[in-house]
Amino acid sequence: MSEAPADTDNQSTTVWLCEDNERFRRTLCSAINQIEGLNCDQSLGSVEDTLSRIAEAGTPDVLLLDIGLPGMDGISALPSLRAAAPGTRIVILTVFDDHDKVFRAVCAGADGYLLKTSTVERIGEAIQEVASGGASMNPEIARKVLDVFSGKREKQSGPALTDRETEVLRHVVRGMTKKEVAAELDLSRHTVDSHLRNIYQKLHVNNRAGAVAAALREGLV
Image (cartoon, rainbow, N blue to C red; front, side, top):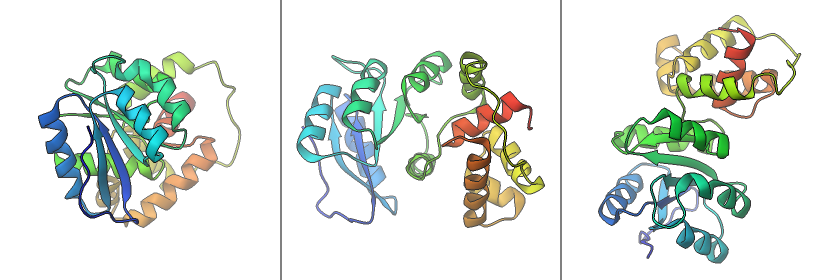
């Protein structure tokens, strides 16, 4: 069964939640709807229900996906969800900071992960991060991804990073959010976004996780 808010802001980032714990699902959906610019208009209890809703109602901008679900679990469901909603950014929800499971999820196509114990502010930041093309991921996970995929891609050549871009990338590798990077370097969020877009383009990657992996692979930080 899904729950939908009474008002829908067409300018909002559309968020769906797939979580089998109904109480947590309702609480999280309500919390997301209190964050400016976000609209959680579908909350579902299984992957099967989510795939059916995608077929009926289209796709969200961001899907928060629990790992431990009845029926098809979150990790094994990622290929099916990717095929059904290729434009949707998928963030894994987990109770523990289980790096092995998160790593498997990232390799299967997740754009990042969130602990269920995260603050509402952190949840909002992570959703906005992935919606804008970034990834919610810490450097340890990026290193594990790098260990698996290193050697499978030739080193890319291209324009060198500027000193400021290298500085921004160094903070990203440390796991800082864009807001934290902006505060640390006394820059606006807009300027940090601009630097990140340049970094992604120069490193031939599409998101934050790719930038971290490339930085570690190429010894840029």
